[in-house]
Image 1 (spheres, rainbow over the protein chains, first blue to last red):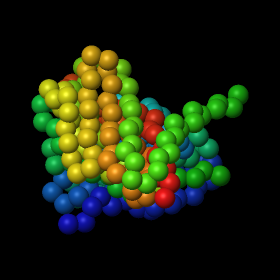
Image 2: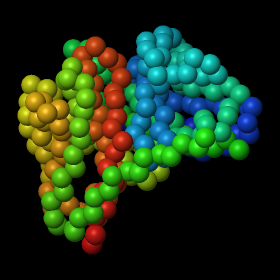
Image 3: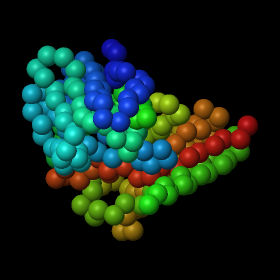
Length: 118
Length: 112
């Protein structure tokens, strides 16, 4: 059973370009979470999605950032008009059930996409 | 102006010694905690979890202690090995939320 897959592993963009980060959850997982990690810092929650639904986007900037998890295919984190401050590692995690509420389930993390904005 | 990031706390131990990594949390409503290990260039890897109705949980070579009174969590690694060198994060989750809140992490270096 393959783990969480993310691609690309490294992405270089120039200021003003768009960045698209992809995440394929583990087989059977329908809950996806995106986190951002700056150097020497912990992970910061961005968004939680289920298939075709955004459940919680409280950690995602209102402008330039969007996320989707279509019925078919990977989850996509999209950053429009990137700026240097967007340079970070972006991690995706998936779980079988919701991580929170009365049911706890481990979130399995992907290897991350390291975005560098020149 | 330019912002200065926080330096990651570091811990160096001799191979074979026990390691203790600490974490403080602030939300008294947090009721589920996980310790993650992150090696360089990789995503976080689950180590052990604990719910707030427990104060101790043991795994293979690892023990997590939870003190809800002072909102403190610790990870103990027995007989630390070079392969344990990594950054360790605690993460907390409250019953109302869907997200985990991660601490800043502690960098563990094992000296052979």
